[in-house]
Amino acid sequence: MVIKNIVSKLLNGIFILTILLFLLDELTSFEIKSQVIKSFTYLGILVLTPITLLWNLWALKSRKWKIIGSVIPTLILLGVFILGPLEIILSTSAWKTQKIIYQNKHLNFKKVEFQMQDVGTLGYNKRTVEVIYLTDLFMIVSPVGKDIHDSIEWVKIDKDVNELGLKFP
Image (cartoon, rainbow, N blue to C red; front, side, top):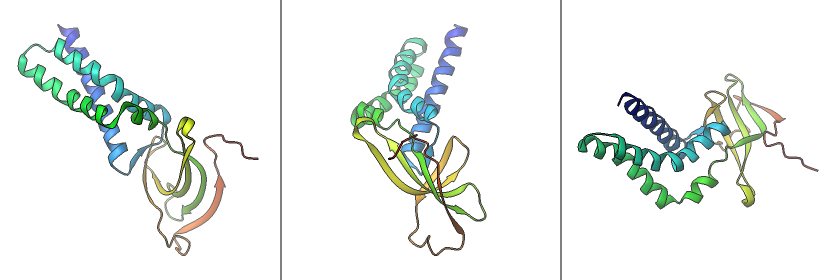
């Protein structure tokens, strides 16, 4: 009884954290930089949703708690089927910095970067964005302003980073 309760709280806690990270990454300018966390989040949505749903239906005692415990996993499962599991799997790759183009004069954690995302056999997605690093694991991304070349707050540095490890001839 006590072990079931602990497992229920732990499983549901991890599931809710996974959902929050997934929704933040998909619906806002907040992005997961760490490949490990992004893979855990996206694949966790696919794996933890049915596990949590079945666990809550089996382990929770009262009918009221079974219904409450199955609402969110059922909605997420519906969303996975609508979005498509393959689409979620193809989105597990994090954006990697290839080149830092500009750096803010006053804020070292604010940069304009050229980034690439490996999408498997489909090749690479590419983008140039303004990035604010919250930590090494998370960042906030926004489009680059058109007047960045004329702005005095940016310093052009053109530093190659190549986080993907691509070799160019």
